[in-house]
Length: 394
Figure 1 (cartoon, helix red, strand yellow):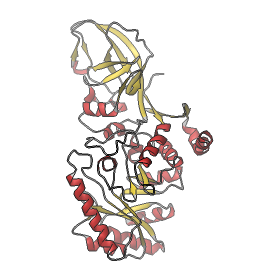
Figure 2 (tube, helix red, strand yellow; figure 1 turned 45 degrees about the vertical axis):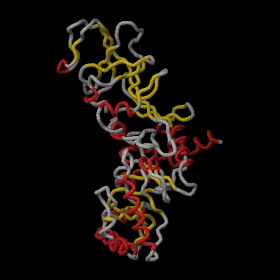
Figure 3 (cartoon, rainbow, N blue to C red; figure 1 turned 90 degrees about the horizontal axis):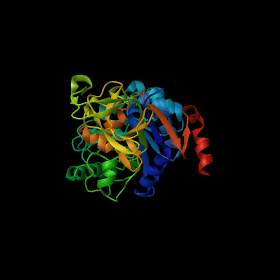
Figure 4 (cartoon, one colour; figure 1 turned 120 degrees about the vertical axis):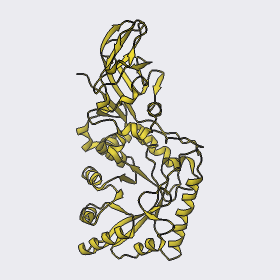
C-alpha cells in the first residue's frame, strides 16, 4: 500500500523545550500554541507529549479546540487565544479553561454569566498594542481595562499582547509595542492592580527583542523547529530542531523522450531522454499545486526536481537516467535524507509563504507517525504515553 506520511520526532520537542527554557528567565513560564492541529503535527499526541515534557500552558485558538485537549489532558492549563462568548462560561468554568477578554463589552458579558452561575472566572486581558486585531486599545481604552479588573466575578490572572513585526529586520514597531504594553501595566500598578502573568513574546520576540520575556513566552514555530519568516538580527543564537519529516514512496517509473509532455496542461515538456518517477503525494495531501515545476525531493540522498503540475494525489519527478532508483524507494519531501535536507523554510520560500502555512496545510489523510527514543509510538499507546515517557526518561 502506497501513501504519504510524516514522522514526528518527540525527542526533538523535548529538546526544543529545553533550548527555549535555557534562553528565558528561570521563573518565566512557557506556553505552547497547539492551534490548527498543533501546527499540523497532531493535536492529541502533541498535547500529551508537551504536557509530559513540562510545558506550563497550552494555547488554543478556540474553545472547541480547548475542550478537545481537556479530554486528552484534563489537568492541562489552557488559554483560549480567541474571543469567547457569555454562553461559553459554563464550559470554561467546568473544565477550568482560561479565556481572554478583548473589550469592556466582552468583559461585562462574561462577568454577568459568571455571576449568574456563582463562579469566579479566571481570565487574561488582551491588549492591542499595534497588531490591529482583537483587544483593548492600549492608549484609548485604559479606563475600560481598569474597569474590567474590578469586575467581581472575573479573576484577572494575565495581561497579554501580541507582536505584529518582531520577526522583521526593522524591529522599531515591536519596540513601540513593548513600550505601550509596559505603560498599560504601569497604569494598572499605580491603581493597585497587580496581574501575575504578563506576556507578549512570540517566536520572533524571543529571538529578536531583548527584555520582552516578562512572565511567560509563547513561541510557536520555534518549538516546532522552524523559524519565523524573517530571521532578522537573531538574539542569543537560539536554534531549535525540526520535528517533522514528510515522506512518501516511488510508485512508478517510466522512460520519456524529447518532446513528451508531463502532467495536466503539459507545463513540462522533456528536452532530452530521461526517466520520470511518480510519487504518491499531491495537493490533496497539502503538497500544493503552487510547487509544480519548483519543488525538489530527496531520493536515495540526492535531490530531484518536481516536473509538471502536481495532481491531487500524485506528483512526477525527473530522476534522470543514471541512478538505481526503483519502485518502492522512500522519498523525502521535507526533512533529511543522507547528507542532504529540505527544510520547511525551503518549501515556504518556493511558495512565497511562511513555514506556519506549510505545516498547517498538511492534510488529515497524511498519516502521522510519532517517534520517541527511536521507537514508534502508536496512536493507541498515547493513552499511556506519560507512563512510557517517564519509564524511558528514568
